[in-house]
Length: 168
Image (cartoon, rainbow, N blue to C red; front, side, top):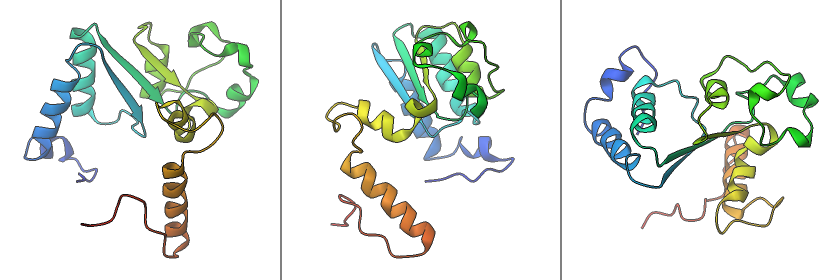
């Protein structure tokens, strides 16, 4: 289900089924030893951000991992970083972060928040970190099939069926 970006978007989330989905998210992020893995979300929805930020404020066992290859640094700054810059605080590097919500999270001094950016922030790289994924450097089959289907759809040709998407 999708809510189109309009001025009434936040109000639309108060109706069913979105209100239930937000409640479930709120319940999930209040659990002990919970991690939220974020890929493809730019933190532009205040109603979702409130749930996540409130949970970070009240649940000391919540961890957030955000993956975005482009939201933190400009390309020239990214190119100047070396491998020894990995796992360092953004403030310790001689770069100027973008003014995005994800860059603000990367600058936060909260050890429960981690941001993967650059090559490491790409979805295919994140997928390789997941349990049961393919060896490093090899794109998981399901991800490769999805990427191929999306590329074929963009070209206007019929994509192959995505495994597991068959109707019963």
